[in-house]
Length: 481
Image (cartoon, rainbow, N blue to C red; front, side, top):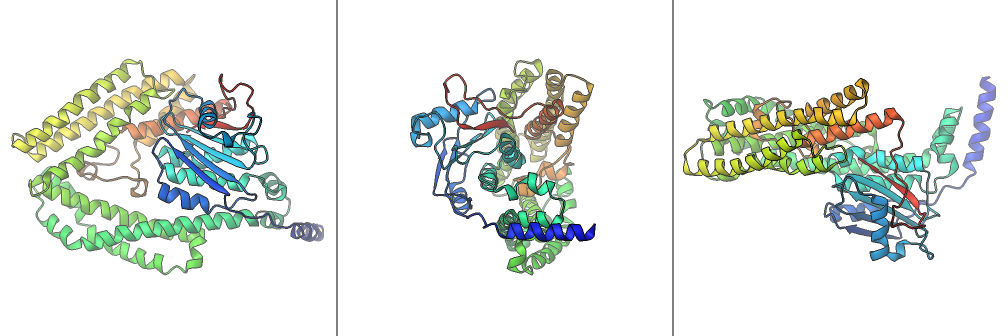
């Protein structure tokens, strides 16, 4: 048997080695129509321009603010007809040859991928692209997700049969898979190297900031009033600050000891991510220490310190419309009405607290107590609304358990500093699971409905172009995230 397998490997390897590698070409053009205003062009354009396709391909990126009930396919087609007729074939019935379109609706939470007839891929592969970036978009990483989607599309468009997952999965000899996947592996390693390099720069920036502010952080910590509930809890975190900073220094050395060629290795990712997590956490904590000292003592700049405590709460309240306007948001329910009423009231309250703080009728401790109570009230209202959402979507006990688990899991998870999390005095003083936010609710709801749809065996793709599409039959589909 071993001789048979060896002979088979030899024959198939010889065959594969005789196949010329697919060409690697960067896009012939990149068009970005960011009407939603969510992309960082300075990051996006160079990244997409450097992605290698197998055949000359024009990449078009279109974003717009739609709604949960919108048909993204129809809206993309309408935009193309009005603004970019060159995206359409001569007869107007398909997408133009050599074209890949990526569309994003961050408000309605839809992703779409569309292809010229000579670039089209299967519906399953289109779903693969969306799955590749779902987590990024759920964390509002719009630019990173768009780049990742384009990279995945480049891997799949005109993919040779010997590089397909089906062929690799069916290979009975491991060596065949290695040979067939070599081209894909190069792309993955290149992408990993770019991500590691970028993350290392971000970690270095955070570490440098912490190092630069070490003396100021120590001075701020020494003057935080320890008799304050919030001051005492922040000081508890400061006691290990130096230990964590020393750990960050060791991690910095380990990350920079990596040879440049090793940045493409998976093992390097773990080293760099550990360093980034520590450095960014410390960079956030020294800001909290400074704000705690400034606010509790009402020292110079305390107003800005207070604004930074309120800002995450106000940003979270702003996400409430996205939640309630979503397909499963149960906007007309009594629990939704309670959330809307709370938002209107607490926005007025926040302004009142700031005025009272300024005139001295309340002290900073009282203002933080009120903010804590407001966040706790929002948590309770969201938990009540979660039961409304579950009752409206789930069909049986199993589905109700799935949704409840997803909502609770996301609600009890604090995002890491690399996900844009900016710690405040309250988040430092209380456990991460103390406050349930609109953002975590949104993520939990999306996860729960996706898991239930998968369990029901429902397709996550929409392929039609709506009532205004006419006889248009271009390749492509969209789905929710």
